[in-house]
Length: 94
Image (cartoon, rainbow, N blue to C red; front, side):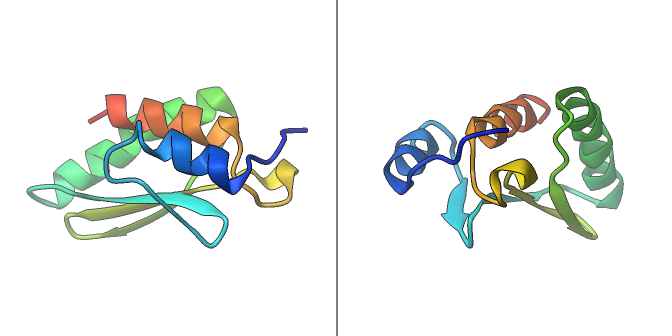
């Protein structure tokens, strides 16, 4: 089971991730692309990272926009190190 991070720990870790925010027990970010195909390609790329980590984000796509929210289910829906690790991998997939 993963341990939930405190608000202070989350705020500190967010300083290293450009554009990510914390709300409703999730870290989240919105990504914009030139078109639908690029947005879907990004979703496909991050799906491999998520599957390898056995950690699956909430995704929303509308045309060229992708919203990603992360929290850890086995930590009671709270934010953990696992979420920040996947967020870092997502950033590298851009």
